[in-house]
Every structure is written in C-alpha cells, then in structure tokens.
Length: 218
Image (tube, rainbow, N blue to C red; front, top):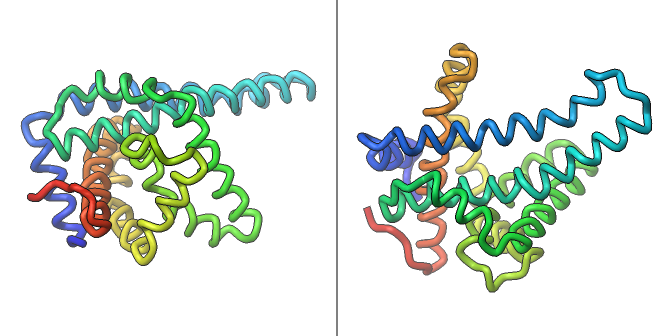
C-alpha cells in the first residue's frame, strides 16, 4: 500500500488538466444527494402530522434506496475509471453505471447499509469501523456482478482486513481541505469530492493488486 501523499498525488495526476468533467459530474451527483437525502427533513419543516411524516419519511427512504444509492455506485466507479483508464467521460459513465445491473446494485447497497446499521446498534464505534470495512462495496458491485448482492459487502470486508485504519487515515488527511470547502459555503466540495474519490479509487486499486487482481501500474 502507498502513502497518503502518494495516493493524493496519483489522484491529482489524473485530474490535472481534466477537472471540468469531474466537477460537472460532481455537481450533478451532489445535487441529487442533497435533494433526496434532505427530503427526510421535509416532514419536520412542514410541521406535518404524524401520519404524513411517516409517509413522507418512507418516500424519502425509498428515493435514497432506488436513486441515491445506485448513483453513489455510478459516481464512485466513474471516478475509478478516470483513475484506472483515464476515461474522462465522468458524467456519462456515472449515469450508465448507475443504471446497469440496477437491482443488483440497489440490493447490494441496501445490504451494506443494513449491516452498518446493525453494527451501530451494538455501539457507535463498531458501526464506524464497519463502515470502513464495507467501503469497497460500490466498486465490487460494479466489477464483480457474479457476486451476490449480499456477498459484495462481505468481499469488501475481506479486502479491507488490516486496512480499515489506512482508509480512515486517508480520509483524515483531507480534513484541512474539508474545512476549507466548508468555508466556501460548500462550493469547494465540487473539486474536493472528485479529488478524494480519485484517491480512494487508487487505494482500491492497490487492494485489488494485493488480492492478485488486475490493477493499474503507475
């Protein structure tokens, strides 16, 4: 495994001179996430009665499951293709990959979220740890459609054995940029999100190499 600095340099090497397609895809992706995950707050903001709150809350959860989750798979893998193949059709790839093998990805992300929630019920810390254990699930759902939706997160857990802190540390290394992006009223995330996602794609590429799978050689 490489150092955080090397992962970030690898990500920047892929994005340098090609930020526009990545930023445009990120804008679309973040708008989808904000609109449909923010819908869970709508009943409270409307001071709706209990029945309406339950109905709207359930509708919001369904939208996350059937729209946001597969979009997350598409976005993550579009940035993976940018890293691995220098494929800069990020928006097109994001949409295509979100829709291909659609139900398999919906189920895979549902099972991943369910497992994290169940671990969180034990204590907060185990849930946080397992969220890193299952973090490679979006990539596995795309690259290994032969693996069942349930097994995809189990495969991620196997790949991440001994590397969960490495991924946490990689995310932690972006904390300064995250704070800066917040100070820009969130606009900075349009550049930060593809930067982070490309670095995580490089991290996943190394995990594949360690498993004997075909991987990119820098």
